Image (cartoon, rainbow, N blue to C red; front, side, top):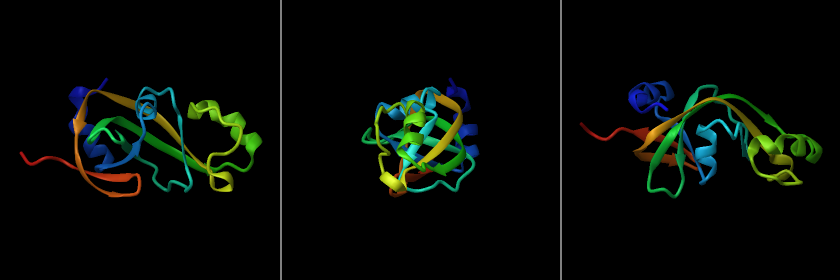
Length: 130
């Protein structure tokens, strides 16, 4: 748990993060959920912040994006779905289902409040003024 390393984590992410629904945001930063699923690929290969969407702006930790790929079939999806922590028989976004591989999670013991600019589920953290 990295409450004393918030400043380091924020610098390592360049303030870039992704918003995820509860409880998945917390499962990501606990290292239980190691795949995130979206209808687009992720070109980033860096540490990103994880915020719990609809939480009023809480960053719960960070993870590293280490890969991204399209899921070619429902059979492949069934092999991967346990890493996503959602049991579905079919790909959530059909032929557009992409998995982002995540590693090295860090959960913050106390979530950080943030304000942000956003594009879809991506956000850019803007630290509060001193």
